[in-house]
Image (tube, one colour):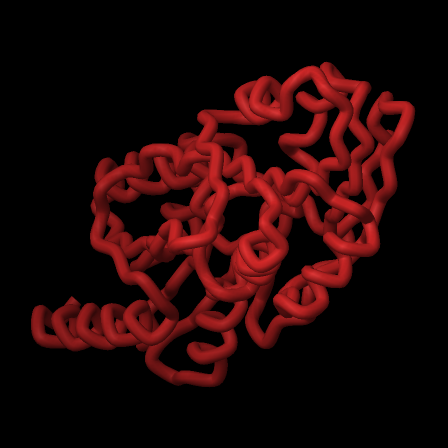
Length: 255
C-alpha cells in the first residue's frame, strides 16, 4: 500500500521533491500550495491550492486524507505555517520532516545590514532619498509606503495589486532562478543604491547578493525567523534519503 505524503510547498525544493517522488508506487504524494501565485508551475503530482484554515484545518485535512508523512518544504520565512505543521504533527502522531535550507553567510566584500522585519528595513534606508531594489515578495513590501522619498524597483512573480502608494515605483515581473550576470545588469541599469531582501538561502536567488557584493552595493537583509525543531534536511537529496529511511522503518514495523 502506498504511504500518503503531504508536501507543504512554495519553494523550488518542494517542486523538485514532488517531481522526484512522482511515479513511485510506494508513496502517494499531494503538494499543497498556499495559492498566492497566480500562475504556478505545472507539477506532476496532485496539487491542493489554498490555505487550510490554521492548525485545526490542517489537522482535519491530515485526518480526512489519512496522511502518513507531512513534509514542511515551505519558505524559510513562512514561520506561522511551520509552527502549525509541527504542532499538528505532534498532536496527531503524524511523522514530519522539514526542509531547512541553510542561510547565506557573509563573505569578504559583502555590505550587509541585518534587520528584524520590514519596518526595520525602512528605518535602515534612512531619510536621504535612495534607489532601492525590493526583492521581498508581495507580502512584505507595504511597509515601504512609510518611506516615499525613495525610488523603488519592485520584483515579484505576480503583479502587486493594488500598486503601492508611492510616487516612484517600477514593477518587474519575473520568476527565478536569477543569474548573477543578469542581476548585475539589473542593479546597474536601474542605478540601485541598496538591495532589500530576505536571507532565503539556496542558489536560485543568491545572484542578487553576489551581484551587490561585486558592485559594492549595500544589502539590507531581514533576519530569519525562529522555526520549530523537527527532523530536518538541508536539500532535496537529503529529504529523499530521509523519506527512504522513514519508509524502511515503517515497513519494518509493519505499519
